[in-house]
Length: 111
Image 1 (cartoon, rainbow, N blue to C red):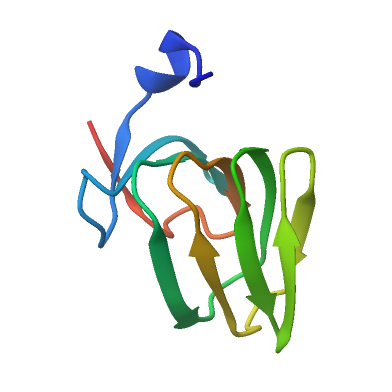
Image 2 (image 1 turned 135 degrees about the vertical axis):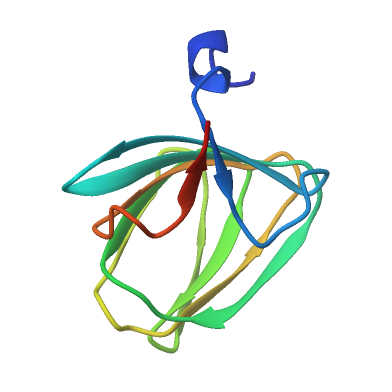
């Protein structure tokens, strides 16, 4: 199951990953950024940190390391990453997540 068409019609994002690996659609407000990610291929996300982030897995699987603790998240699982905490992930092809970033300008919208 994919995201509904109206979500796929949302603006894309300028993200540093190839479009054949991941697709991102977003809703932005001055208070934050909500991103609907679809991963078409397995992906390793290197360790990085930024403002606070909350997410939930809709489909697939993510092995997420937050502050040195690794856990596998599956559909229905959510996660919270505090601001400034180092995190990384191994994301399986077919995974879909919704991430909410406290930084409204985390990624630029493509209109």
